[in-house]
Image 1 (cartoon, one colour):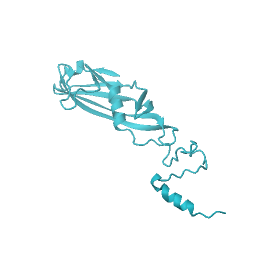
Image 2 (cartoon, rainbow, N blue to C red):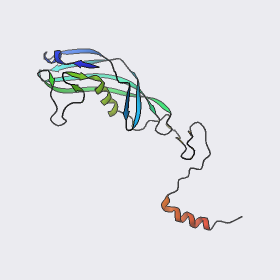
Image 3 (cartoon, one colour):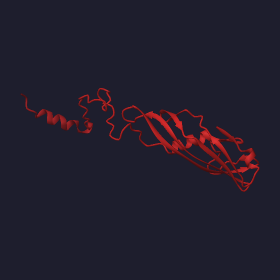
Image 4 (cartoon, rainbow, N blue to C red):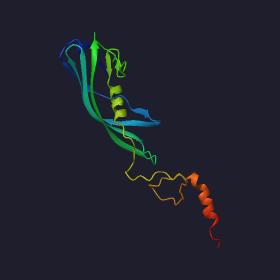
Length: 176
């Protein structure tokens, strides 16, 4: 969803409200693909602060579908969206920030609400996505999902630096 700021920037100390929508359905993050399942209805409020600043505010929640980091099972999780941005405007256009450069959510005389939503999703993204807190993951030997059933594989991982000690212990084992 794109919102034209041309009308609001000419009216100092004015507010304008818009019914918000999200047109993003899929995105990639850290090499994984995710789908936005649902975005709660929201209202975007654009406010002019004097004649030089535009304030953008809206809040919503998103439901996102992705893979569990341990077992790759499909998981649905919530990410809150809380946008509160203030940008400088001049002659109906957003002025780039001296430190950060141009804003990614500004396209000429339009504010890209989808870009704001995606930025907030990425900022608030969970560090680990798990299907359950005690997810057992995938067996490194046979590749089965350990949450469904125990495969019985020996998955003991030995430190290769200690391999010589293991050889010493194995040489002293009794032979039956």
